[in-house]
Length: 308
Image (cartoon, helix red, strand yellow):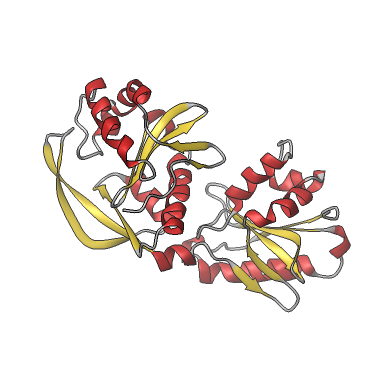
């Protein structure tokens, strides 16, 4: 099997190979009943001997098996060895860590391999894992598995889900055209333009309030802002191939979707903000599920300083 990449980085996380010194932290994190109960082959209790055996095996699968680290602390594990699997330490639940780690691993998987699909499965009742897989675009297959849970000492049912390459690619592609503009998903090549826009206080106040806008901060924002097939992204607004602004589609918990637009000042008063906003708002119903369409998308238009 082809290897992806040994090390993956996201704004908050480092995904790296397992090493022998990680055994104590692994035993502590996964040796919690609320964690082990959802992992079929993981016994409970789980101690240093089990952790060392796992790491000895996992160390031979670098690029397919990663430790998830945040601020130098182990927060979970992830693999794409045959299928996608992941787990998080109890203290890391509910913080978007699994989604962020899966974004990186799945993009690396499809980007570095010619694979047509990736499967995943979850033990019935594990709503957190279902939510993460749905955010990645996985859809339920017809297959159910009966597996022996080592932690529960009983047979449990797991649901198989699948993400096809074509579906993954579609969820990474955002492109709209209007009479005068092109709106497209952001990528690494936009770092200079994003850094230039966010260097000005009015833009920074909208896209990254309270953040010192260094080049590294711009990269972190750009990584999070990319289109991944779900609400919570920004698109580049382009005129003749040049980025002249940003359009964001965001939503606070329990709130309607909000469409925000910022335009560089030398392109103001020409209706570009209105044109971009109308294109994005009109696209929401087609691109997202019905429940994600806002009753009335909000609009914020900022006059940004010129990009360099």
